[in-house]
Amino acid sequence: MTADPIRWLWAALAVGLWLLIVAGVALSRARARRAATLRASSLASADDASLLVAFASQTGQAEELAWMTASSLSDAGVPARVALLGDLEPAELKAAGRVLIVASTTGEGDGPDAMSWFARKHMTGPADLSGLSYGLLALGDRTYADFCGFGRALDSWLQRSGATSLFNRIEVDNGDAGAIRHWQHQLGVVTGHAVQADWTPPAYDCWRLAARSHLNPGSPGGEAWLLAFEPVDHAPDWVAGDIAEIGLPGDPSPGSREYSVASLPSDGRVEFIVRLMTRPDGSPGLASGWLIRDLALGDPVAMRIRTNRGFHGPSPETPLILIGNGTGLAGLRAHWRARASQPHGGVWLMFGERTSAHDAFLDAELQTALASGALTRLDRAFSRDAQDGRYVQQLIAQNTDELVSWVGRGAVILVCGSLEGMSTGVHAALESALGTDRLLELTETGRYRRDVY
Image (cartoon, rainbow, N blue to C red; front, side):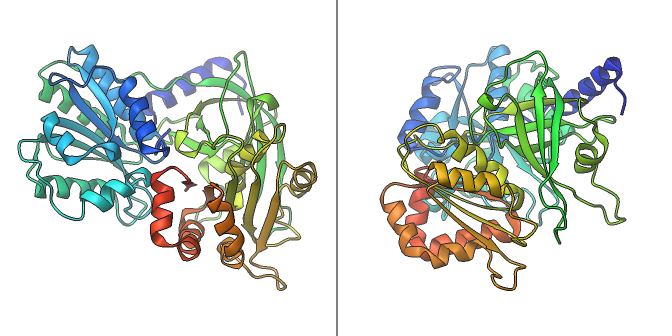
């Protein structure tokens, strides 16, 4: 690994150029408060002359692209305002006349959590959107079977409702810069004003690897490591729930990787948990292999902390239920640590992994948190243990009465970990325990939030 700062500068610049579009978010708060916040901070007042830019976002990328779109339009002399698509009524869309929409797909074709109310109320049948013209940027990932599934469903609903597309739907595969440039070109065509050719890429700061520890020696699963990075000549700020976006070295085509931040600014460093991935030929994964095998202590990396407001926690007095598995513990850890030094309404952690002997991640820290009161309750499941054999979703089923009691006291539920298996199993278990309508209500009011991957 080279220590040449010039080579690192060029590598960081190359990564930044590719990352034009990797731009936190379901903004899952009470709908009135979310709408008021965004309307108050729009680039233009909601008058007839302003062009509406709406977004449907799960982790913040669609929101960031929406604001970049609005900013570019404003710079080109076209007044623009930004709104959460899920907070709009069809009549508001129709009244806008023209709308540009940036919509993410999460999981296997689903819409963002904050869109569940909108989809359930409006998208089950056509609305009256005659006279509305729209452009749609759909974000997705071709590694999932239903690529851009929600964006395609939204496009179909708009057309069935009588709206007219300004141009063919633009689909973005995992941050494809070419698709984003095509979106920028169409903005210029639609508005009749030149839109800057390139958006300013995210600013990366310099960090250095400060520590790396193996969390699960001997595990039947892949190696999991806790990594810590210290800032170099800057003082970053973030809150529990935010995401670390780290640029990969060398050829810019690999882009970046995102990791749930497991620490707080008061710790003086950013920490996250990485599992070593392997390719079909047995070689280490590009990002995890570099972070775990190649990067030496003290080596620099290009990284930024990205706001992920859809996974921020509630106020300290609100009870908090944390549910996750594997490396998802990172996304939950900062939440209980944030409450460690103050009175709070309770924190209940449910966590699942393979074996208690090898995969009890951060066990000493968890026991200390229980003893100090930072954690109110801890339940763990180990699927490979002969005396256990449970997955984390089974902890929900076995503690339904207590779960209902916590939710009845106003608890917020945060889920972090693997998309396949864990998140679907946890969702089904929560539906069984609380009821489908109740879980939808929690989703729509920001009391059920997910960071799954």
